[in-house]
Image (cartoon, rainbow, N blue to C red; front, side):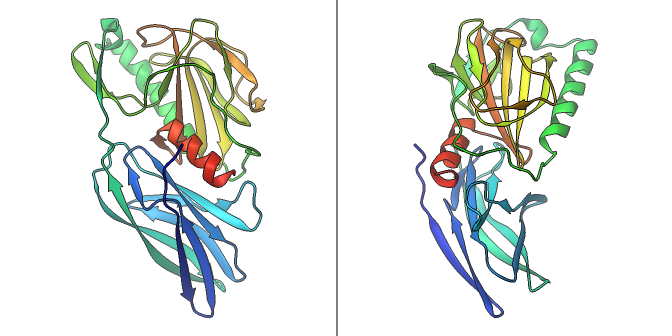
Length: 286
């Protein structure tokens, strides 16, 4: 269950006033927070800006009287106070407000893994393949579909023990190689995997690191990913319903054994998928 504090702000601008609700102004690196806006006559909400990154404000998926924006914080963000700029138009005139947030250290643990050296010390051919696959997926994650396919709460892709949580620093064969970018579910080979919510398949292919990989676009910059699969039952471009079986778990790619790696992106930023689902379900889709 997500622990959060709801902050309500009333801004008076010109002759108009508008309300903003922020789930939590203190956010750990790798986590996501939510900002909701009550629709007001003559106020057009546009986007939030943090550093050089912009986050669009969208129509609420289940409440036509509100708009919202998800604010994802990078895993690599350092603890600090930050100013987030709200851009809007009042009676057609551009205007801005500043929202104050604090980034908190997530204090993630380390874990050591032993894998095939060929998956750690890559030859030239594998390096080129991995780089091209990364470029392909980054293009997908940074594509923001204004439409939302979400009509109800998210579900987990399977009911199983979590064997590795998001954010743990990954040491492969005694070499630090980044962090765990998702949540691992224990799963024997050929365990059915469910779509976490309605969406469209934007990638379904075998990849060097993640093996059999499916990425679903849920709209408005929200993506979920399902990796190391032994079988994929869907194709790119296919519309998917929540709980639909999209494939079977496996041990393809860079793994120590069979499992499902489940991850999420928000506006191109890698975030904790379990915290995102809790946030969406308890605050946005309640």
